[in-house]
Length: 271
Image (cartoon, rainbow, N blue to C red; front, top):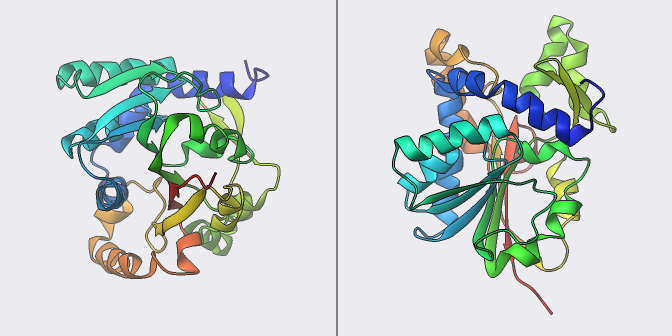
């Protein structure tokens, strides 16, 4: 199983961890803060009532949150285990009229039901499973309306919180994001590569038909999303770091030094 193709390994690994994925997110105030900042970004830029295509939708946490904010979502993913939990949430919350679910890779977006969409959304680094974003970007004109937005949450090369691990002697974690050929990940016994892109790299893959709208760092001075207990154990320090984080994250060079960054582009075809 460890030798299976990258996409098959990812689909199987995330299917196996689907239940743990939801459990990890519960009682996790820092991850809640990260997600809320993403949702605030979305609502600032995308009018309510429009249709959004979500890539790597996972168990549907983001889809459910976005429909509560007035959007309609077509949620896609390649992991059947994730999609099963997503579909269960749709049924339990009675959101069938606002969320549709499809097993689909973001590398194969031809003939997506409901295209073209008003926006294409991807959260928490799901697109960092490919060496560069070009294969996804070149499909956008087929699925995105002129004037439509992409809002993608990506993982940069520089993460200050991880780099601080050098002071604890954890050099592998401190510098893993700088691996040009990807960092090897192990999830549920399956291995695949994760790639990290600076904002400059990501922007270079978009052509002249896309205009930068917003760029915002995410968890620049606060811990990474993997830190489940810091916010509870050191609540006063966490509040201070969050206050500082909110103020520096939209600005250069801080927006490229976090656990993630939010990249927002408008499709404005010039031809």
